[in-house]
Image (cartoon, rainbow, N blue to C red; front, side, top):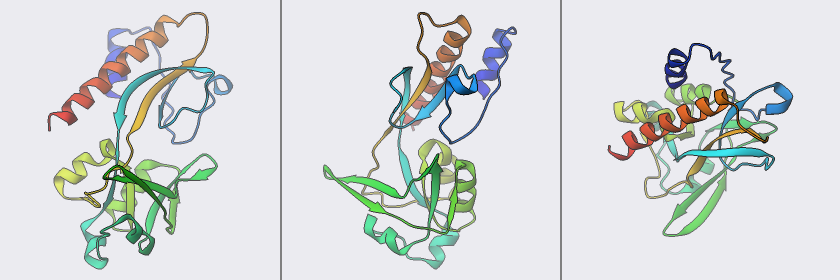
Length: 196
């Protein structure tokens, strides 16, 4: 949002309707020009510009860990209440990990599911369970000790972040301006994370 605010100040003729949703959005069907998507792109009819790479972190609040032993290996998550995200019709129950070049997955369960990442973060901060969150969403919580990263010897597969827009003969100036702004904003964000 701050990057788009700066774009609008530089180009007062641009108007923006920002729709914030963790659900899949049909650009053509809903009259949208640009979407930012995290993860594997499934619709090959769209043009895509890669903005960044992001990874997710298994985390919990200190209050949750005061009552429950921290998981040491991914299979330990089966004994925990996991806070789950719904993406469209599916719930993200399969959490995948890498260690020493080997991939493993565990299918987790929990008593709270939401289609809003900020709500899952709030539940995690309140100590209701363990979450798998984007590092960007929780980096300040980790730095301030409000959340604790778990399973540090395991990594999650990085997810690509793309700006997508409808295919066509040419890209409009306003869509190009939005994509250029997002590209620069994500580059600055990625650079600041890599220097920490």
